[in-house]
Length: 530
Image (cartoon, rainbow, N blue to C red; front, side, top):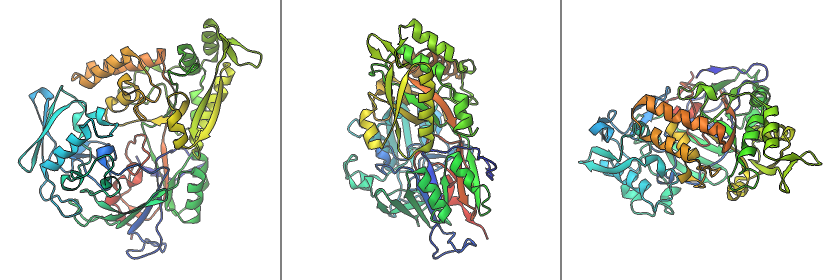
């Protein structure tokens, strides 16, 4: 992904990911504008509940506090991190052996050993640990240490994507092993092997990180990294404009206001991030398969891309973007309001006096929640409601905080965001498998389709690429016939940052709400401009 200036109306949407911000003047190299090149402030829309990998933090890599056995480069290819090399795979894909890098220490100075790796994985997989991502490691039968520097994973079945799961951050047993993983102080006072250590966390305001003097990858040039919590898009733009922030991830209309700013650069990242409406099966209206299919036909995805995203994205016909090699090409479908009306008519949903359809005395109406302060989701929700109304379905868009939304996810629709990179199993299994229905943010729609479950299991366990492709093709086609979500758009991410550093790039990004995505994914490698 390359950097570019914004021209015209800005060509990207970025939502619920991180934002970078400028530091106050202070010690260290001067970036040429009176501000320190050794300090960076990154603003994000939300803060994590925990900084412990045992509860899911940093599980997809790029944590600034921790490292995994492997990491991903700019091209997302796996590379050694805490492991000295890529794993040796044996027994037909059922064993993975990692040899640890020499000389790695935790930020408290204690050495990393194989026992720390074993402790981390066993604790994550322990049923008593409140980690909703443990299903991602379902294939693991056992993990054991061989001496101080070797770890062997034994799998229940060959899992083609397993190596990519070992970006999971490793924690120190000598600290975390003495605590309850669910309630211990490690959740807010983490110790890792990563390039930074946590210096301070003011909940709801900011987190401050300092360079780790024991970092095995070399001392970062950026010595202080501050993450500001800035939930509102407009506030981020205002703070960026005032000079309080160094950068921001912004929706197109706000990003466009910086198009003539010569001191900032814009970075656009392609993503797997999509917006969709969850349609809870328990809902009296959203649980009706005909309502779901009608909404799928009624929604004008292309108009959303053009008008809301200003072209910086693509229509979402399912959870995988159209340029993904696993995308089933035959599922792309047009906006078809006539089909939506026909489906509803045939199913007995007849127009009422106010234009809203009625069946057996029940109006075709439901509430759609979206997080307050999120302009792009708000615009999606309003456009969705407008499209639904044309078909005779009343959707009442309502903003709320996540504290309000979460208890209602089982019965009310939500304008949600999802998307994972690396392998189709990573995003589709947690989104759709019935065994995860209502498990936190997993399978928010409580979707339950036996054919989809079977295909997801086949895709997870399969080794032959053709068989896996067939399995994920089946998943996508089933979602057309039996949609548990209305897929709307895939969103590109746009970042505007002060032009004070070298080495900034972006990766192909997931739906990421934390510190991992954006041009700061490799902030430890940045170099100040001279």
